[in-house]
Length: 141
Image 1: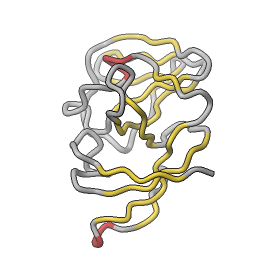
Image 2: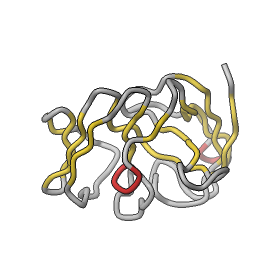
Image 3: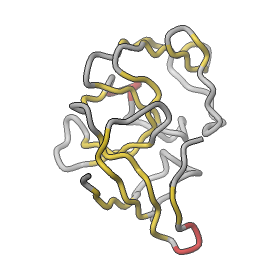
């Protein structure tokens, strides 16, 4: 198991993760609702943090501000924002579809980048070690 540390430098995952949070990830196959850190597909060494909304073989559709996975409305307790713009994405093998929790602040996610290639494994966030008042294991909703 490969562990890595990352610092959060923007607000696309707030309120769960905020600017200044320090996180530990483990490399494993992500599942629905996991938060992952991955390298931006066109900016080497620039990492993004987003939530997995769709897995390989699924179709993610955004319509009327809501997210659907394989024609079923997705329950998303982690966000209060409507999701825009409308669109539909099929997810190929070894890819996931990701969105930021703070949809209005999240710019580089599946809506602009499309499905993200992960080669079977991704850096899944498992622990926040800073700031001290928010230290602890991260849990899936």
